[in-house]
Length: 108
Image (cartoon, rainbow, N blue to C red; front, side):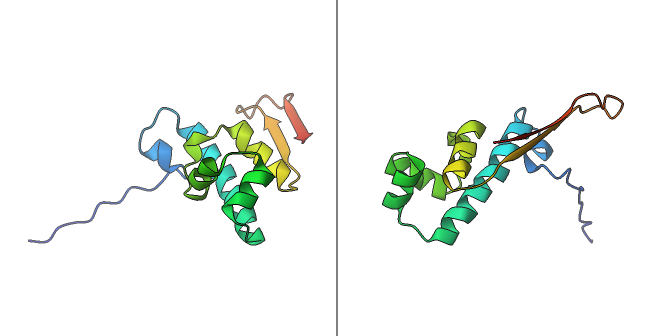
């Protein structure tokens, strides 16, 4: 008896694939959080230094470094990027291809 493997192609958002109601928000936090971690790792800072740089208590730094991004809002994660000297550009557009009147780029 052989057992067939079943695979399902991912949507690109693991949270959506799991059926979570806030999948888009979690995916966005994850993408931003990973960028914050990359920048922090490049600087090779101690947690105390990260705490001072980002303006958060050391226990929160520990959560951030463990990838617990759900503890931080998207806005807070974007503030971390700004404090890490990152230029942030948001491209806003309608989800509907037919509505191109709403297409804006914002630099933060």
